Length: 327
Image 1 (cartoon, rainbow, N blue to C red):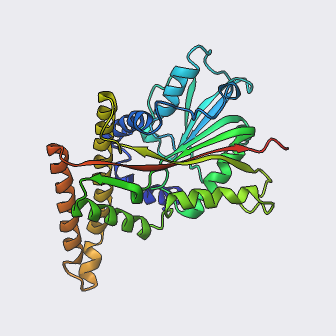
Image 2 (cartoon, helix red, strand yellow):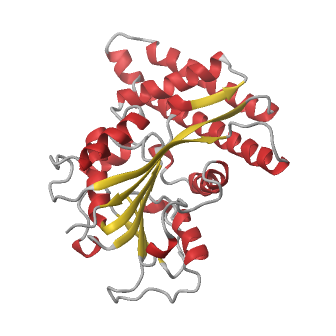
C-alpha cells in the first residue's frame, strides 16, 4: 500500500470516495455551511477584498464547489486563465480526484495532490489566499503539520490563510438524547483509534501560535503566520428569529445528522473488518456486538430525521491568519 493510499484510508469517509452521493452531499454541505455558519461569506469579511486580486488555493477541495462559487462571485468578469504566470489562478488540490467536477468553470483548475506532500515549485509563494476546511477527519497531527507548512509556503508575503474545521465534541443536540451522546462518543473513539487530530480548537491554536515565536519549529523556511482572528462560530444553534433563519438552521441540522450517521458507518465498517480477527483470536461476537450497537444508533438517527423531533448544531472553530510580509 502506498503512502498516499494509507493517507486516504485514514479519512473516516474514505469508504464513500467514489460515490456520487458523497459529491452531492459535499456540495449541499458547502451551501449550508456558508449560510448557517459563515453568514453567506465565502471569504472572511476581515480579509480586504482589495488584497485578493490574484490567485486563490483550496486545500482538500473535494468537488471544487467553494472555488466554483468564488469564481462566480468574485472573478466572473475575468478572462479564463492562461499559461502566463502572472494571470490569476483558482486552483483546488485534493488527494481524491474522483470527486472533481468533470467540467469546472474556465477560471478553476482542479489538481490531484496529497497536501501533506510538497507542492510543485510553480505554486510556491503565488497565492493571495489559501482556504482549508473540514480536514479534521482525515489527518493525523503530524500530517496536519505538513499541510499547514505547505499552506503557508503557498502564500505570497502578506497572503491570507482561512481555516474552518468541524469538531464533533462541540456538536449540540436539542433535546439531548442518550443515543446521540453515544453516537458522538463512538465517533470520537474512532478518531482516537485512527490517531487523527485531537480537539480542534486547541490543536489549531497550538499549531499556529508557535509560528509567531523565533524558534521557527514549524516553518524551517522562516515563513511565519500571524493569527488575526480565532472564533468558535455557532451553526444551527438558534431556534428563534426570522423564518428564513429558522429554515437555514433546520437545513443545517439535517446536514449534521446525516454527517453523524455517515461517521458512525465508518466505525461500523471498521468493526466489520475485524470480524475475522475476532474469530481467530477467540473473541467471537465482540465485533458483532459493536456492529449491532452502531446499527441501532444509525437507525435512531434515521428515525430522528424522519420525525424531525431532534435538531443538531454546534460550534465550529475558524482561524484567519496572514503571512509575514518580510522576505
